[in-house]
Image 1: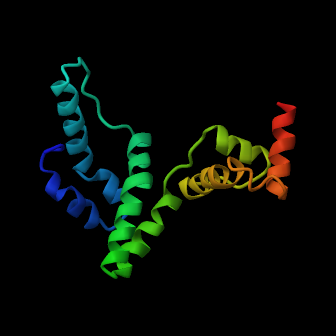
Image 2: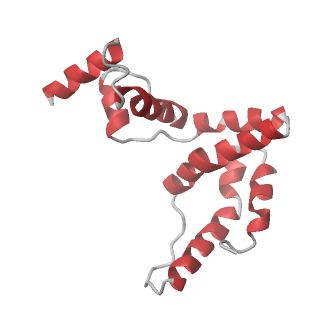
Image 3: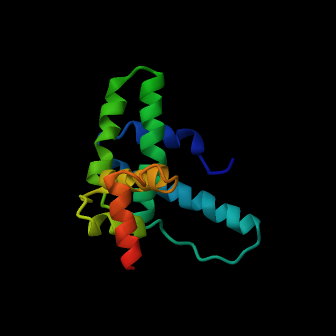
Length: 147
């Protein structure tokens, strides 16, 4: 198995009642143990560390939320969808070049939900030049031209 006792990881997170409870779950210790075992199998010298707050937030936003939402969708259980749709609003925002660019244009970036939306906008519209003729694209072009 990739991660020890992994058969119960999803169940543990699924049963949590809140994001705070999910963050305190023992799952994170199991994940780092599994990751450590993988590196040791490759005979690399690594220091065993705890997963940091930002890494746990990233795993929750990019893996747990979509997976648990899909689980609720597949099993027609609204409870799971409603529970996890609120979690990105409780996670701290991402700061990167993309979100900073939007913030300089006075777009709201208050939490991970906003951050993910801004990154998605840039990746799906700006990167493919779909927004070039729209106000958003024009503002980005002006901002980037000044840099």
